[in-house]
Image 1 (cartoon, each protein chain N blue to C red):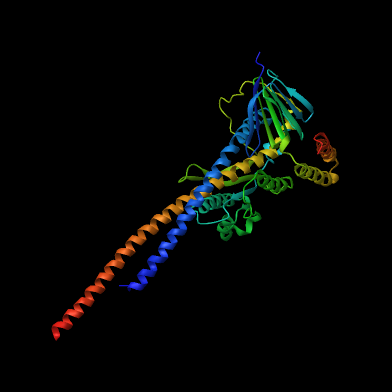
Image 2 (cartoon, rainbow over the protein chains, first blue to last red):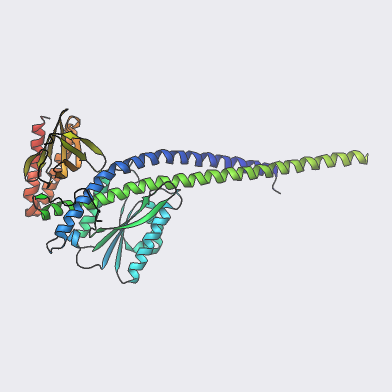
Length: 292
Length: 134
């Protein structure tokens, strides 16, 4: 049985751990609210953008003159995986799940004889993938000193991706991020951004309307497709930010609860040991008295 | 005939305006145009400039760069990459935009096809400054 002093120290240390996890949980809750707000205010833009793009893609997509970003390069030999994770850990399975999905995809592509290149956003994902696929890294985007995610951050990443695409470095680009469902559920998602694919919005409010395009459909499409890449990356970054905070909040909630249980258990053990010590001392005194 | 229509101005980061207006002047890529209720459905890309929305409560102006406008008979949505209400625009904002345009202009020297475009962008930016007398 451990002695009393050790137990006492142990209880103190678990208590201070609980304080830390509790504080982290509260910080995450506050940040989550902000992240959710910005994710929500970004939604109208992305929705309308995709609706217009879907319409344009349908009318222009079939022709050979369609921009490469929509049509693809004609092959799919080289894949670029953009893996977006958090800069910091202690958020449950958040980083691990995204990395797992990306690793599975990279393994599958490689088994099919494709070339895989990986661009990482966020330090944690880079560390997680480095061991298996470190030789495929082509770049890294560091967001650790970004206080508040802005569209400019997404634009920078998009510019990087587009430059590589224009240089013919890859044929297909996929982004990996975590979709924010609610505080306990975040779904790791893979989304192909190049060539662009737009979901047909069924029964959209503009269905049936025939638009005049100015300058021309092709010119608009060529202008908007690169913006579409930035928009997709921006939404993914925001979803990721909300997911990270959500995951951290529930992870820290669990940790706080575990610490509480641990403290209860240790306290019972401590009290029992103390009782045993007292009983022992009493027995010694009594038997000493009897011996006289 | 309806004399107002729904006007939405959204940027990637937030929605800036959603109100009833009677006319909106848009800096279209091929020239300015004014959309009024029952305008023919049109989609146009934007060049950097000032977007003017006239509503029953007065006129509001926004500095917009990049993006497009979608006009329906009964409404108008403008999706701009950057949109700032004109009264909040400072010289610093403008300098940043001009610097960006100038950078693009210089970078484009090697590709003659887009040099005109970039020069136009630069000129647009500088004209914008004059217009707002900053």
